Length: 111
Length: 115
Image 1 (cartoon, chains in turn brown, purple):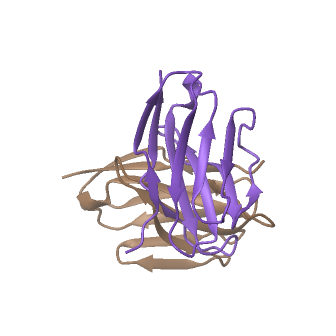
Image 2 (image 1 turned 30 degrees about the vertical axis):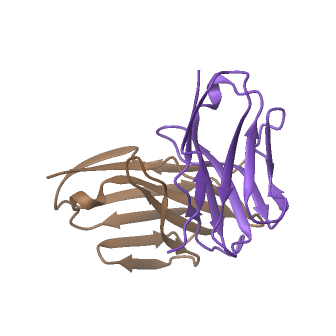
């Protein structure tokens, strides 16, 4: 079945440093979503990517969808303490309504 | 802002007992999801409803888990009997449309501890 992996599993950065998490699917995706989960909280939707090679930006966050629609990345520029949390990608395969969540990348920002 | 409601927020039960969780999605959302999240892992889909119909329950352990959404609004997830390995966060989410890529709104979850 479809599997979605993320690397790294953990990332500690100094405040102001950049951060990137990578998401890789075993199968081609129709679309991919990104969520952020704060410690003790629930996942909150960040963005959705649909098109091959798509790039979207939200302030300091940049999201990319690979050309083959099997991988994606989230890049945060100049991290802040408010960026702390776990970032999940969730991919939907072709011909299915089901989203498979990735393993997540836990970000810790040191002030 | 509309939110997904879940209850209870916390549940402690002994193994072999029955337990039930309730979810009320955002009004008008046709799609409802139940996920299980083990600490340190991503949410795993247990069951997905489109209105009152199940569209995916391939990962639902049907010998002990059941889910219903009788009127296509709120939903109940039941475990009977509970096992130690069922200890996890149970998240409910809803979206306005399936498969076309609408965002999922998650509730606060029910933290289940089986002793």
